[in-house]
Each structure stands twice: as C-alpha cells, then as structure tokens.
Image 1 (cartoon, rainbow, N blue to C red):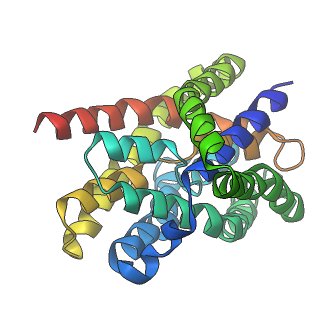
Image 2 (image 1 turned 30 degrees about the horizontal axis):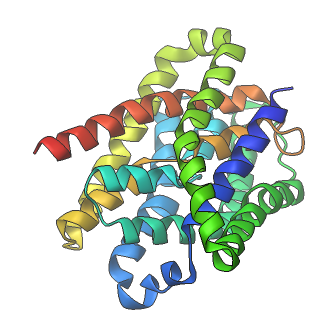
Amino acid sequence: MSIFIVLPILTLLMFELGLTLQPADFKLFFTRPKPLLVGLAGQLIFLPLVALLLTHCFTLPSVFAVGFVLIACCPGGSSSNVFSLLAKGDVALSVSLTAFSSLITLVTLPLIMQWVVMQSGLSQGEAISLPVGKLLMQNLFTMLLPIVVGILFRRYAPKRAAHCEAVLSKIAFPCLILLAAVFFIQEFESIRTHFGELGLSVLLLILTSILLGSGLCRLFRLKGSERRTIVIEVGMQNAAQAIALATSPFVFGDARIAVPAIIYALLMNVVLLSYTWYIRRR
C-alpha cells in the first residue's frame, strides 16, 4: 500500500518542479557554463563515487549499500531551489542545475545502479535484481512526464500555473517529511537495528557532499552566491525519488533499500537548515 503514497507524491513534486522551469533555464549552459558544469560534476560524478567509497568503508549489507548509492544518484528537486533562496544563493543557477540534473539522471541513474547491483550481489552473495527497462519506464512516467506537463502548463496558462505553483510549493516540503515519516514507521525495526552504521554513514555522506561542493567551487574560483548554491545542490538529494525506486514493485520492490534514503531525508533537512541559518546569521 505504501507505493500508493510514494508514487503520487513523487509525481506531484516533479510536476511542481516543472512549474518552476522555463526554456531560459536551459540557456545558462551557454551563458555561464562553468558553475553549471561544476555543479553537475559534483552531483552526478563525484557524489556517487563518495557513496561507493563509504559503502566499502562501513561494509554495509548489500541491500543498504544499494540504497546508499541510490540516494547519492538522485539529485535534489525543487526543494533545493527554496534552500538556495534561503541561503541567498544564485537561484537561477539552482533552477538550471535542477533542470539539467533531472534530465541527465534519467540516463546515468540506471547505468550506475545496474553496475552497483551487480557488484553488491557478487560481493555479498545476495540476489538483488534491477529491471532496467521498468526503471526507465517508471522514471519517464513519474518524473519526465510530470516535468514536461508542468513546463507546458506554465507556458500556455501562466496565471493558473503561478497560482498552482504557489500552492504546491507550500506543501512540497511537508509531503517529503510525510513520506519519510511513513516509511520510518514502516521500517522502524530495520532502522533501529542498523541506525548505528547507517546513521553515521549517511551523516558523513551529507557532510562530505557539502565539503565536496565547497571544495569544487574554491578550486574553480566561483563567487559566493554560486558557491552557496552548489553546496546546497550537491548536498541535497531527492529522497522521494530514491524511496519510490526502492519500494516500487516495478523496480527493486524492497523497502529495505529505501532505509538509507529515509534516514537521509531526516538528517539532510537538519544539516541544510543549520547551514542556511549559519549563512544568514553570518
């Protein structure tokens, strides 16, 4: 029954993301390519590599290792744009990063996860299957299609879209917390048993992603608002997407794989809210 909660929420969040996008958001690649490429590299290349390293350091069971890398492969949705605004970041860059990463992960996520599943199953002797075709289809219907519908709605009915986005933006964050809470209760025993290793590893993933984003920005000499945005974009993952893929009967169909994403959703908001509070105080 939980799948009837997670898929509608993910679809709603993706539709809300589409309402915030417009063709101009994709033009940033030609006008300011450096911060966009730095952010995408941090999100799509370096963070999954960090997650793989941490799974080996903590020798996580295969189902949790797969879930751990899965959350690292799901860049944040529209909520990251709100955090960038709160942190006085570059909101245009944030929106563009969200737009590009949401589309690129339709390709990169299946490729990375297929390799991770194969390696985890071989190393720990536990069979975990990943029907790549069904994963692609679910992503198309629950992510790409709602985003496209949202973009078209904004293009052809801007006033109604603005009103709809104003309503959805207020419920997006509560929906994510509700989703995490539902699965936290459902998987409470598994979380309680493994929270020691998973809690620490997830917290390290969040903190490392923030340091990674900051380090990349300093390396490429990006300015303050761009740096704050990339820190948030690299550090904030789409827990709803990870939970949906883990629990969907069409993809993994194993709620245990969602456990790292559940813990991530709870810790991520604490860390990033603390980060935005620090930025605003400073």
